[in-house]
Image (cartoon, rainbow, N blue to C red; front, side, top):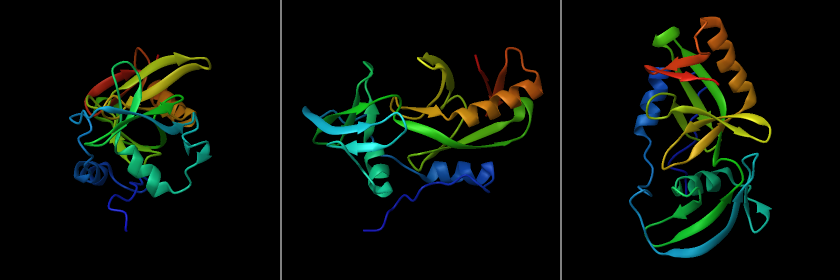
Length: 186
């Protein structure tokens, strides 16, 4: 069966084109589904973004993308795979997704920044998808809100790109603008 949602690749696309692609993409309403908890999925998303089932990597990217569409995070921090009829726990070591590429248009408070996620989705940094800086054992942990409580860890090279923008624009505190909102990088 052909994949209905091929991955969104941001390279070489305008932000207008990306916004259109993102707007056309829909996800199942897992936030409205609340079936009984059925147990553990025996699945894990490792810190590097690799998905595992029963200890073996899931090697089909389309399968990972499909599972990512029925994933949500509960207020207590647990992650679940949810369908209309079942709810299964999934272990997530750091975040469900990783931001792996970035593009930017404009300057200052007119800038817009988009990120490509390892799930095949893309998001535009802004009020609906804010950036936060947490702390983990390795230092700052920059994250993007994705959907349904899920987050994407921003890859270190992308964080450095954001820092370069913040330094070049001399924002105080250091940070970046995107889609009309300011996000501090500290």
